[in-house]
Figure 1 (tube, rainbow over the protein chains, first blue to last red):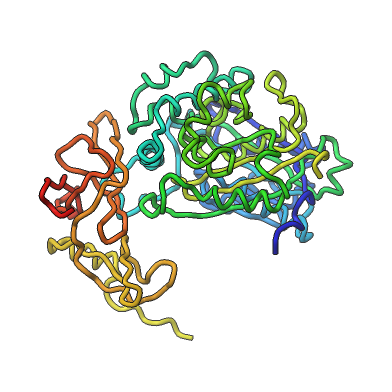
Figure 2 (figure 1 turned 60 degrees about the horizontal axis):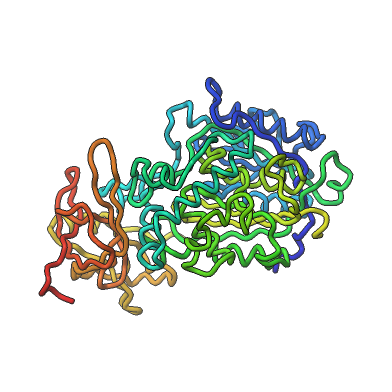
Length: 384
Length: 128
């Protein structure tokens, strides 16, 4: 199967969020449920219309069971695939397949976390790798720092280049009233922040926030007559490369180099067709690696590509217009938040940060320690 | 078909037992000659279950290294590429950090009461 049968056959028709930033006194599933209900309402549907469910969280071993029970729904299709923060981008494909196969009619994809107010640290179900454990890596950051060091060694990438990624994200966040981290941030601020794992400072790291997010997908024929402007799923591709960072073949080349071409082939598009690039920025180095691996610049050139405001507002490529995980919101597993920003931009609802043209958006999710990579292309009716 | 009976300790336990004896052993496929680490029941990719234990040369090169900065102190975490090919996580002893590409040699120490492989910087005059 080449997957072309999926292109444009389903659409996101509702999105919702809850408690982005700090949501004291609220649990993960409460935030998830509030976001889910907001997304269903945005779609003009009712809870009883939801017969498909995709979920993954950092605290539920059986996420679809917990969510279905909490909401009081009995889905005929459910998928709790958990490959880390990229899970929700993969859920788009699974939902599309289930919708196309007629297994269900409306799929809810959802997430929630209260990790900031519950302790202020990244919450994860991820188990330590026995052969790494004696050396006390602090995952995920140790793995990403190792990748950054290798990239600097091979390609002459500098800390200043990485810092420019954090600065660009902050500049976008300053245009987004929903962003948690707003205010001035300079290259020097990033460089002089507390070193966490060389070469990454605390400002090279994503936020630890609370937050819930959800979206609703239906078949395209139905989407056309619904309340909101549909955002079509044009292509999705996923790839695994490793579980332990020790097994990653080349720390400067991620499996985004496989997931990206798969998604572009399905969508019949190329990088130059993309108006908005939403990349999972767990750390500044991930933005850089994915720009390279997804074909927005040559391998090794990411550092030079992002320099001096090139991906900031008014730059040559619109990247992470919400402010990203670095400055908008990052409640542990961020993948769904990429999708929400892409839908917001394609709808034309992004306010001060709205792109002049946004008909094609790329969402790239990352999971584990650069382990799973999933790329999705979303588009307006204009590109069907 | 009845599953094949698994007899005795698996590769992970065997690896630990070797380390306890002061031996740093890795696996090699008899047919392909490829070295494997971390230890497994079969060669990854091919599924060939002809892995044998061989003594690692202990020589390797730092592929990447970071220093974790914590309240309890700073320590490095390195990925070392063994001369045999596989990469493993470890640390380089006696230094805060070293440049990528530094030649290192394995030594078995005790970490948290268990034997573990760490590396020392290889002095000039050692194996290339």
